[in-house]
Length: 147
Image 1 (cartoon, helix red, strand yellow):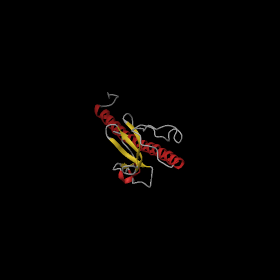
Image 2 (tube, rainbow, N blue to C red):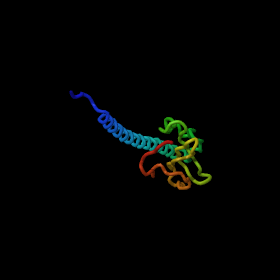
Image 3 (cartoon, helix red, strand yellow):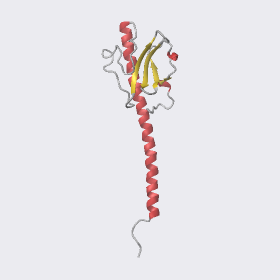
Image 4 (tube, helix red, strand yellow):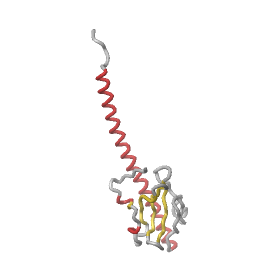
């Protein structure tokens, strides 16, 4: 009489195939999340840039430098609220106005442990290259892993 059921080998093969497929799916999911995070950061930084341009047009000067997480003078008149990056705890945007030192005016994606990680220049006439931080628009894979 033949047993009706699966052998141990058959079960192991099926389980290993399921594990392989789920690891591929998880890898794709993480890549999609990183790309989504990048898109959100770009959108938020460009909103800050647009608000700072409006402030500059109306006042003739850039908003003063604030510490990481601090909202500059153009909030809330030109930007409803200071955004929070989609990176979790320890990450914030930092508005910088270094016109008196090296000419950089813009926003940094800042980590409390690592410091400034990415930048987006606001004043295109200033020395944007004065900041040695990588420009957010030049990130190769168009994805960011917040570590």
